[in-house]
Length: 206
Image (cartoon, rainbow, N blue to C red; front, side, top):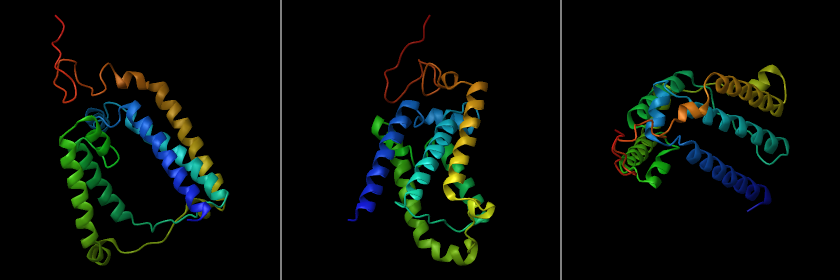
């Protein structure tokens, strides 16, 4: 294993640990929190994911600028992105989980998340068999569009600019509605007396 590959792996593991820690502390993996985001009742999930995008953009800009990683943009497929996004969003809203939170839910004791994981893996396997037909019939091919190439600036400048824009958006969102208000007294968004699979039932106060 080359030193550059090893460095990239270690960097990825470190970023995964940091993201996992933030995911757990923000309670974004909770089904109530995820459904609440889909219903536009709270925005902690959006804030956490925007923070992850900004952080990832900065790290990728540094690694790319130092020559540790090479950009591998995918083709721009508008129809596939729209259809896939709608299907993924519907699945997240129905399951109260997304691919990045299912394992966290299993880890804290949500037994129904096991079925979500099995369904996700089954869907991935089914797609791998259907992809050759989908490529010909529906998905097709498209150009590889990179915003920084289109505007004629280095990638690292575009990535840093994107991160700064996201920071401003996050600051404005936080000013309008604090994450503490969204989190509430119970991370699930449920009242204390409602049954929670990992908590004991608590009688409501008189």
